[in-house]
Length: 497
Image (cartoon, rainbow, N blue to C red; front, side, top):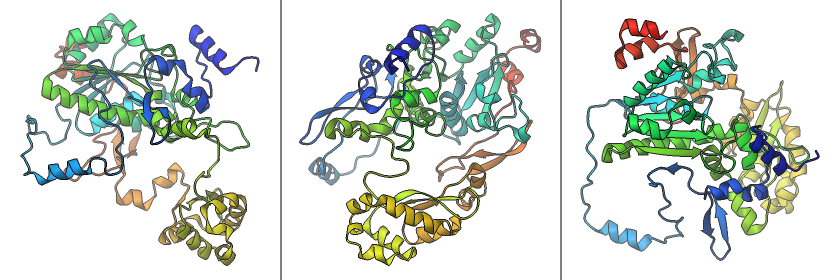
């Protein structure tokens, strides 16, 4: 309480202590670290000022990532496109695809040195779609998710966490203590035979191990190496070690999450950990395509905070152009009403309702038998409904308390009103829509038995996509990899253990 946030932040950076300020968007825009990484890009608004907008979210060593053009104005390129479409279509010259892969990344090998969330989730995408992903880990310092719940039958164990399991499907595991010189040489052999290497340690850690990009490139000039951490590999805050919880605080997500009469709140889970992998997988796919076309590898620095800030772009731009500082609004919207989460009949049952227009509001009034809403001139406009949100919330809450959440959701959805039951994880396992899309895949884990793994948020028409096999136990495939892939004899393998 005796210090400013920025003083504590700088103290932590100097002394190796993880202290993450809960920034508001004004403080975020003044963060020196992002300026020194040249993160912000200038965006010229129509009839308005030039503002800072989230910029390039990765730094490749070959400078191949760029913004080719700004967002188009309405029909800006209409004439040019119509002229182009009027020409006879020329055949596309696609790069030749070698082999007869049944899955898109079959034949690709990934050395996965990452841990916790971002790195493992990113590598999992390649694994689920055919790549051989070898997870390098050690029993002496196991991934923290291996010791985090939920554990099968409530019994802790390195191989009993489904938190770890869901993030590491379709992978193999090789146990290596990288502090051991012999193990480090084995890791180098793996890198020589891999197409991609991914690591998510704090900046400098991989170099201290002896696996910096400079060293890795000597082993394998064609390697694609991705380093992902909270703040990136360069800049004054790059030394910050921590988790997505810390990045979400610095990025401004905590300050806009929660209730207006309470303090800042954490978005559920380590928020940036759920965003960054979606960016990194695109990077890996494009880097692999570049490798196929040019034979050139690349080193890519990804800062989790820089990927995540694209999800706050409207609020960041709104602050600079209109002076509106986004803050906590609970479940409400600045632009539409009523919107909220309402308690239903039974124990801890809730429904989310989000009215977006006048028609939806009139349908809601009819379902709730609120004819007076339809004749109230104030409620006839969005602005009026926003002013009366407290009153509307009370009346919707009174109605919802007597409703079965599932039945209310169906009735509202059939009327065209966006609504959804607030589900727990256990509810998702029974959700009929999930079942229809075969989202959960039950697979037999060596220690936990037949358990569900989350699938993909999409379906592919050309093949059955999803997790191919369960997450590995720690070191489960060590002998197979050391012998079959790296060519070590049984005697040499025995000596290494």
